[in-house]
Image (tube, rainbow, N blue to C red; front, side, top):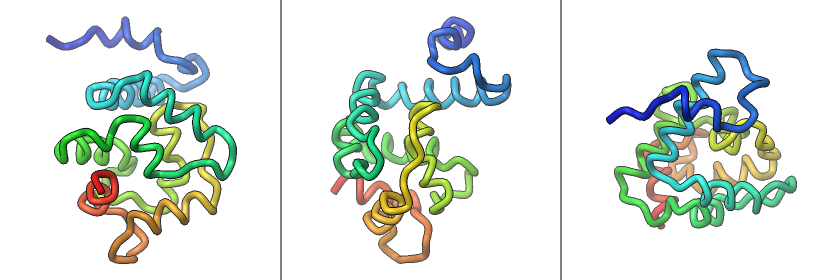
Length: 139
């Protein structure tokens, strides 16, 4: 059974300030993420890193429950977070990582972005691949 997207649409925060295309994209992201992670766990993880330079990727993934998910679920989340669908998360995309979980979340600082990249980018190519992401999340 496919959920009624209209009913869900109106329950999502901050949508009224977005364009129709961004609203639809946000709705799809939230529906996709909520098929893997609980909304309450995501909210808890986001609240814990509201202050600049307070984001820790391992702690975030533990709090949102991703570390307890299957490898397939982790790759599903990776695909959702890969904003340009390139198969990699580049540093520029990483800055907006928290906003992929909820619009209006803050942008990661340069320090946080570089630490996140260093934690995941095993081959030092400046991009995080699905396997690198999965290895870091599940380690």
